[in-house]
Length: 95
Image (tube, rainbow, N blue to C red; front, side, top):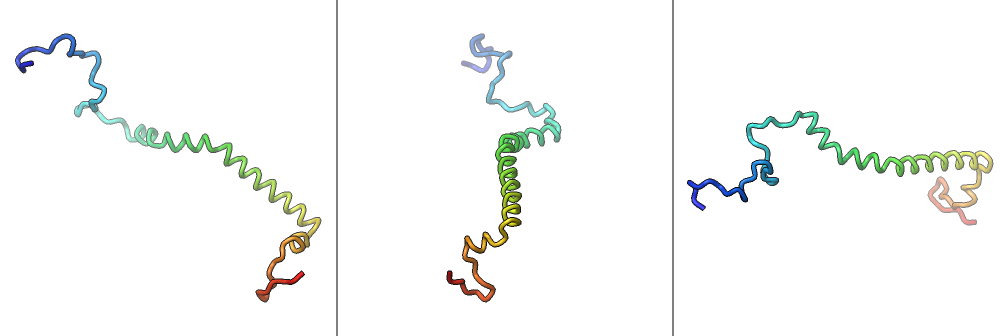
């Protein structure tokens, strides 16, 4: 095809621009807030989707702390009888 000929109707589609072409240099860029919002979108998606897991872990930790405190109040020497902890002098007690 020569440069002095007009393009055919099959190849010239003004209603369908090239999908791989970037924005025209004369077009204004999106606002800074819009760019920050689009950049934060994946992070917020992961945070929202992981919220139930984080809430379940926090609730389990809280319940474990409450149960541990209640057990320690009723049986204060239970940990000492279950786990052999080192003495202050650095040696391990023999049972």
